[in-house]
Length: 236
Image 1 (cartoon, helix red, strand yellow):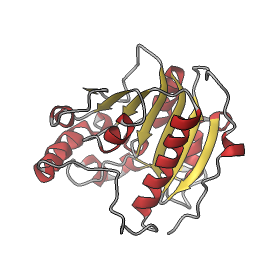
Image 2 (tube, helix red, strand yellow; image 1 turned 90 degrees about the vertical axis):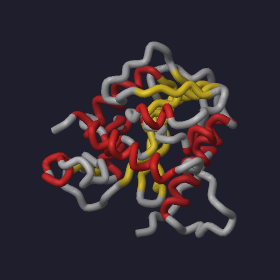
Image 3 (cartoon, rainbow, N blue to C red; image 1 turned 135 degrees about the vertical axis):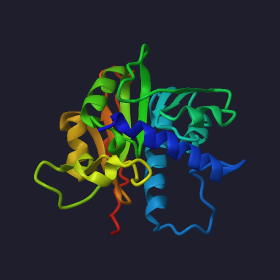
Image 4 (cartoon, rainbow, N blue to C red; image 1 turned 45 degrees about the horizontal axis):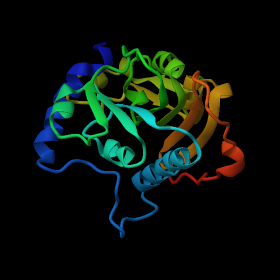
């Protein structure tokens, strides 16, 4: 199995750039966008958690892994002091001018070991692409106070809560796959972090949103469950 389907991601990045032209993806929606659309729900839930962190914690330095062309990066840069934005596709990093408070660089999340700590590490719709998502999460938790992730979920999987898609022939053919290596249900996503670390586990459209506690101590304690209720019903 090619590590993280790196050949696929390089080709996918080039195809995306050829379509994107001068404009890039955004997490902002027009006012008339359907509020029950699953992508709207996922992004709206993620924004609420991030805004809560901005307003109620001392989060200032963020590591965003899997930033792509910066759809979340631009939003984060207006709410947090310093953003380190990374993606496995170097062509994404080189494709645009980034905001002044963003340091953008290419790296593979599965091998990356930070040399500094972060207030928040963020991975949205990334974990399902990794060969060893649990090892990656557990390694990165040592370098942050909070870890926020969203991951597509699929109900009624096997009892382990995960299915290794890399066993399927079509996943191994670059250009004929979404790039997803793992299919996880809600419990499977939670198990990547360890339930004792989880501060919030929320339905977010067809994804599960996790906010977990990392190893770096928080400067002040926040009662997430007591002051923060954004759970929604998942639409199927």
